[in-house]
Length: 367
Image (cartoon, rainbow, N blue to C red; front, side, top):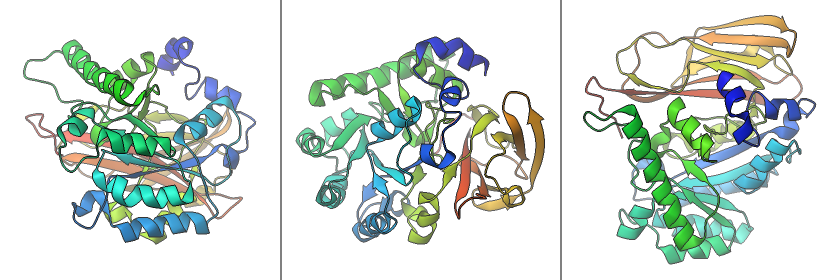
């Protein structure tokens, strides 16, 4: 909250303050959207980050069957930020990394439907042709047919990893230079002006988020969940739809999900160490349209003990404080806590996710 007050002057719309006030009377369902995230669309790439062409086609057919409205990410976000209702079933399709299979398998299917999409790329990988990457010409071709090309950093490093003896100031300067370098390549090659960055591996912390906010960036992460007017625009959630998340039945539930009206979350986005006690996760949301008895939190898919407290707040009305803490210590790598609740006015579920990133004792990351 204090950061929001300090930075309100440098952002057009920031969660928990300006956005919340501008959209106070907006209908919950009409200021809600889902973003999907993919990597490879191939039968021959690592299964954990891939969907087969057949699975991808099934996802697109599901979106059609649900009468969803596929929109550019920018249109969805600008609509929500300005207080304009977005279509009830709005969805955006995004890809991380510029793999050639996006061009050969995903693009023809999206082009046939005249659907927009976004690809976050690493210019260095494109330049070097690393790992079956698209070419600049292929990116330009997609751009002409409704694709938005955006920043995924230049080197695709773990952005939170420090060099030996590197200070926080030096780390932040180096990391921002990496993102700026990628942006300059995008501008030079494709005339990209949008300052959006998808964090490699979904890894970010509050220091990096604040610095990117000051430079006018939106930040896209990889924790699951839909978006609304209370979204943290430096940690925008997207539902991963590859690997174990490619199942059409579970994807259907996610496409219909609703974003909680979030007032506050804790802990902050920070780098942690595996083996530390798992921090308490606390989520404060508006008590509107939520079936309280259905609130449940999960850690990596397993349900965990969840406590819910209801109280009145003079400014925000009735609030629910959802508190949970997975048993045991933080696992190595990336994990997440998801909290869900059934809507009282529809057959849809509210969904919020908090990512946790933990290194080993030597501060080494897991890809």
